[in-house]
Image (tube, rainbow, N blue to C red):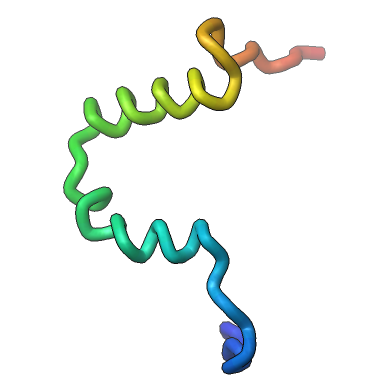
Length: 57
């Protein structure tokens, strides 16, 4: 069960952005999502952003 938000609690900037673009994001194709994910990885980690392999024991 979700907790009701108090009237004084403000929405975060991330929540506001998602609310604004959710309708358009839901219409993205798998290829568009992949391309945007790659772009986000470049912004966050630089040009050489490759997912690291999982550690095996």
